[in-house]
Length: 184
Image 1: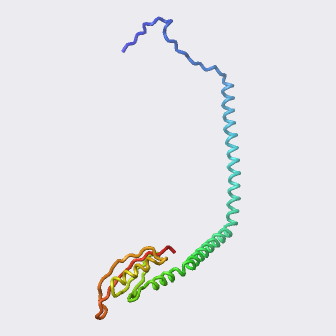
Image 2: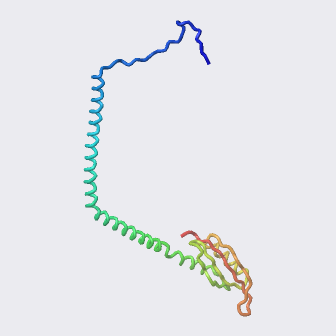
Image 3: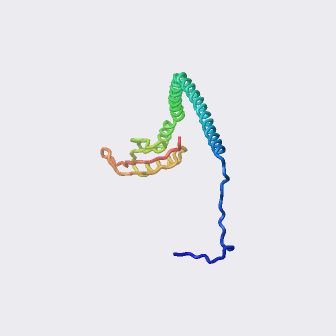
């Protein structure tokens, strides 16, 4: 493609040219020498800082070596203290709740109606108990449920199983209750 500019010389776009000032070689050498001196000065300063930091590191490492036996003894004592505290917490927890199960058994025993016998009381979880027993009738089982629900320790009593059974020649009702107790 051929380009032709038909504009007169006065209207043509003038391009600006950038010229660097002429420098003598003395100035150029002086600038290079100053640059080299500055780089060397910064390098020497950095080397001095590195040596100072290495000295501080070696002093800190020596102090660390001196204190290592004491640190090991402190760690061992801390570990022993944690073990003692853990054991004390277990003992405190056991002591705090030691009468809870006695209260549960006492409450169940006071609420067993006549002609009703318990065969098992199983702690399914910390506040849930399964109570197995034998009675002569469904009414006796209902009395047992009503008595447990009216106690202050149990919040919910459910009948899981009630089935006929025989003991010798006598007809009996075997039952299983699930009772939720108040949290410890």
